[in-house]
Image 1 (cartoon, rainbow, N blue to C red):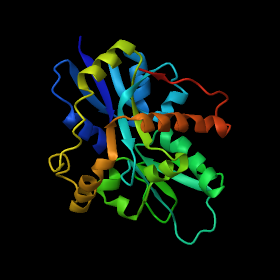
Image 2 (image 1 turned 90 degrees about the vertical axis):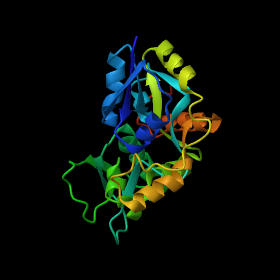
Image 3 (image 1 turned 180 degrees about the horizontal axis):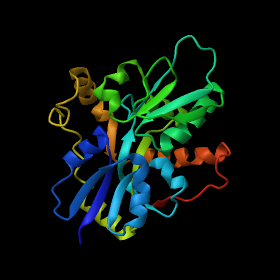
Length: 253
């Protein structure tokens, strides 16, 4: 029986897919990050890369302890931009492929790092970047070279939890399908990334191509103990900040 894998619409999941060994029993589809958890919750024979904070509202999903998309340095799927000459911050606009990660973690990050309570506000793709505090998620950062003037959201979260930032978890409602996929593909990534991503980045500006190529070594698909610890620390944050009422056990497989 064919298994469907849902991936977020970003360059990092495209790199993952390009490094996956050939598998005729797998089909794939790219979706907005915020839609994937709901999709795999209603489809029996599916797996997907879900934003890690989605587990707060989808605790029943099984999560791979071996495969995910983890950032451990500068490279990021989201970048913060701050307006100049401000003494405090009270609101933050969210733009792009926004998920629970950006919505929840931005609020926690600003409270922890700057001791301010912000109100995140989602804006449309047409919203112009004009001297505002804004968090942009997704490939727009690289397509338009916005990362050059932004602050890596991944790096900020790494500093906050003192562990790698696992942005996306490989999850499913079906434990056996998830296990089967991981067993089949967990060795696809042991040799690291290729030296060039030109075939995936052919439409990107050269500075973006160079930046991603040099820093891709800091994006991990085969998770290690420190990544699992990072997942646990991330998912404890909403509880310690009074956003959720309970801690919960992650259903790692």
